Length: 302
Length: 277
Image (cartoon, rainbow over all chains, first blue to last red; front, side):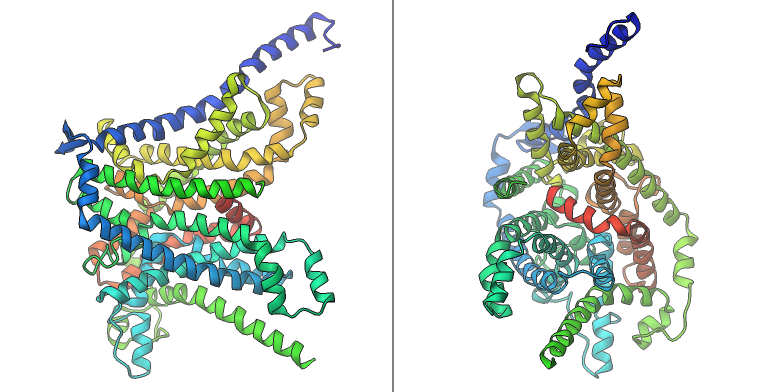
């Protein structure tokens, strides 16, 4: 600092320099403090709970890894995992195909197109609990929208939520309705940032729309698709709100996703240690998937 | 020429189908909410024959629903504000400073790991800790939990924004006599405003919509938020479809209004939040 000749500026510079030295810690501190208190500490407590046996909300003794062994021996846990995997696979696949179609359809500019886009993302903004309500109003066997439509054509009301298979598909369709917009948005951003040259070259060569899509759009878009699919799949793995409102996991266990089973194990059956262990296993799966996603994003230079 | 027209026709059909698919379920909820219960259960008409506000009146006849609304607004506003304040500061440090022993790198990585952790994994310990501290069923517990999750999103989103702002600008301000913090406040923050807006929108929507933590941590209208209120209401009434649809409309209304207000920044906020957050 060349200007530090008069005592006044020198003092200010010194004070400034002193403060500047601790400044990064002062600015970083509060955020780290929050995360340590609200995530890291509970995480450690949770690990401890997952090795404990609880009575009336208190850990009475340690049982080592018994809770984890119980999880792998529990057919309901395995079934919930399987249901979740089926749900995620079906929902995310359909969402990706529809989202990609929509993104291709609406990857152009104009006020009208912007309006359409803004309307299409409504489902992903609406509160998930409300989405659950919306689909109960659609599926309700006596008064729902589908029942009313069927009535109009003189058909019997479809019994969607009282049958295991159709309830499961009802949940998949709910998820598709709610989250296709997310895939659409991410893929749209991807399409809009594609280089122009290959497409101009293809047009000069007289390639048709389908060939251009298969030869250029799809390969260039592959990284974005992978990221979008992974991100959506990770979130779908812990779907809870909509199931809680729509079916609570029923009928039977047909829509019992892993988070619903964990919640019920904790709140209804009061098996605190077992529920904690179960959720840790789920977290492990999700973290592995996330690590995969982060790797993908890094490799794209984001 | 005809091929062109055919293309445009196909485009219109596609766009219209998508719009109908997205909007019809919401419209059906809205229509149900203004039908009388007799019409809902007996006539199964698609379009309401006579409009009624009875469902909304009965919804707000108890105090609960206005309480849910207030709780949601308070909890969302405070937790987003806290997260933006603390998160931007932390993100700035991570974007600009090289701390001894590579602390900044570890912190950045740790915050990212926290962000990737599915929240459901700490729901049980959070409940037990809140119980021990006597914080169950308080707005405070929700504000603290949401602020923390939001902070990790803010750091993750804002860090890249700060990196894109040239360092020269702050250095010039500091040569002119600003302290580093003043330079951050006066020069960097205004330049990062678009990022702040996008981040704020994403976190506000996610916070208002959050259900699991609110369900576990709160149990009466003293602290219950709108999603919990709506879910418990429909758990209680079960077949009162009019009230259920009105609750759905009221539950969704604040967030839909909010997104209309911020419409210009919405798509950007959601896309960035999804990819980055």
